[in-house]
Each structure stands twice: as C-alpha cells, then as structure tokens.
Length: 384
Image (cartoon, rainbow, N blue to C red; front, top):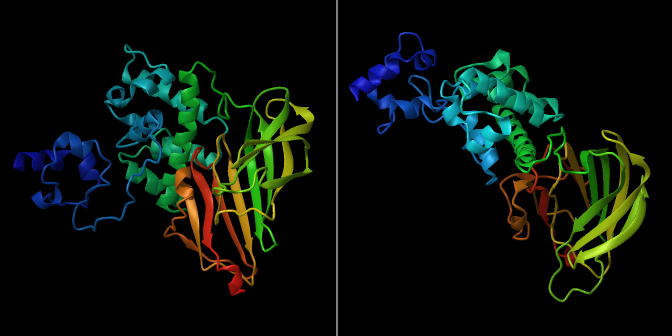
C-alpha cells in the first residue's frame, strides 16, 4: 500500500486536487483501490483531508439504452481528453461517430466532437453547453475531472450542480435517440430524425375546480419533414374494470387545427387526428390548442403526467384545484417510469398550491419515455 500511496501522491491530477504541501495518508485512499480505478474516476467517490467529503448525488441512469449509458460513461475523468479514449469508446458509439480502428487518439477526438455537435443539433443552448463541458469539448472547461467541470459551469451559469447534471443527462438522451437512428440507417437531423415533427413548447392547464376535470393543451410544433399537413394528439386515461363503453372524454379543438376524427385506440387511450390550416415545410412552426373534457360518468386517477415520445423542448403544466376542496398532499412526478403512475405512490418532492389553488411546474427537454407532472390526494366529496 505504501508504494501505491507514493504513486498516487506523485500523480499530477491528484496533486492538483490537494491543498499545498498536503501529505497523502493511507486513510484517505479506499482500502481495496487500485491506481487505475482511482484515476478512472473523477474523484466524486472520495476526497482528501482536511476537506470534508462533499455531498454528491448518486449517478442514476433512468434508461437502459446502451448508447445513453456509453455517453454517460464517456464524460467521466478527463472526458474526450482521456489518453485511453479509444478503449473507453463503446462499440455502438464508435460506429455512430465513424471511428475507425486505425484512427489515432487525436482523430478519434475530432470525430466524436463532430458527432456530438451533429447529434445535439438545435437542442437548447444550456443543454448543448452542459454536454460539451461534461465531455471536456468546451475549450474553457478542459479541467482534469468531471467534478471540476461541473463546478465551473454551475458557477458561470449561476445554477447549482444538480441542474448542470440534469442538463447533461437530458442532452445525452437526446443524443442517444439521434444515434439510434444512425444505427438504423437514417440521417441525423437536429430534431430526433425519423419523426414528422417535434414540440418546441407544450403548455397544459388542468382544471379540477369544475364539476368535471377539464384539460387544455397548447403546443407549438415544428415540422421535421416537408409537407406536414396532419398531426395526432393523444390522451391516456386509465379506466377501472366495468367502466362504460365509449370515449371517456369529449374532444374539442380550440384553435390552430381542424378535428378530422377521434379514435378510441383502447378503452384508456384516445387519439385525435388534426388537420393543420396549411402545410408546413421543414423547420416551420405552428401553434394549436385542444381541450379534453372528462364525461360526467367517468373518473380520472389523481395525477396528471406527460410522457413524451418525441422531442419536447419545454413542458409547462398548471393544475388548478378547487379552493373549497384543496388536496391534502401534492407531489412532483419528475421523470418516473409510466408504469409507476398507476401505483399513486407519493414522492418526497412535495408541493403546495398557491393562494388561488394552483400548482405550476415546468421542465426543459423532458426525457422521452418517462413521466413528468404531479400527483395529489383529494378529500372525499362529502367533506366539502
């Protein structure tokens, strides 16, 4: 262990993280650590005295996508500046980036940097920057550790490290979706190729202060292919066994489109086909509004959540509760698996309605396939 300590203490990356004239003691190094394990981390799992151990969120990967996992792994340590970059590059990601077995490290670094730029496309600037800083592509943030890069970005953008990390993960999921399309032989485009359109902004207003719930959804969409003339708006509403047959909601287009038809895909899933007032070309945007009103003989579960299946740059939701029947608890649903919704499991991220009975939430680039919104517990109607 003494030779190991001497090697660690001599390493310039380790010395850079120490106070001046600090001596490394055996207690400061994990008992079973090896040098390559230590240097392959960004020092988030251990620190050196006399500084206290920082509180760091656990790295939670909420998707099994191997491409997203490879991108997340790549940000550790020195990122793209790692001398063993080729070894750290996963096979799928190497194919997507066009890396050849004969490429040297400098060439690999250039190929990966170019692919990152292309896969991020026109993602929001804060997402793009978080990814490039995490991977040490940003020339201003080529620090030796991921922790140092995150701290720097949090400082210059006046946000906390958790926000930086969340933006990184959002960016990696957007990139993984684009990388998958490359694997399937489709060209990369700025907004998740293979889709007809994506959502620039989505606003939802759910009113629970009326006799029956009333949901208004407004979207600004952007065409990702030429000749976009029709779109689909969907709503899932879980129904208990024995519920009446037929649609659980009435559908009404408020503006920006014509209702072609409403399909009952299943007893719990309604799909509205909308015709746009004009055909959109690539990158053209359009706004529309649609209302879903629960029929009097139906019930909804105590939550509202958005599960994106295409790129959505911004999601905002307002739930307005009845002041005479305020919920006893409200909680945030922040990227939970959709199957968890029906469990009605309260999270520890509790919320409180404001003076008019409203709760407002928003997300930037919610991750596709996960649920974002809020849940609540209302008193029984007889308690009014």
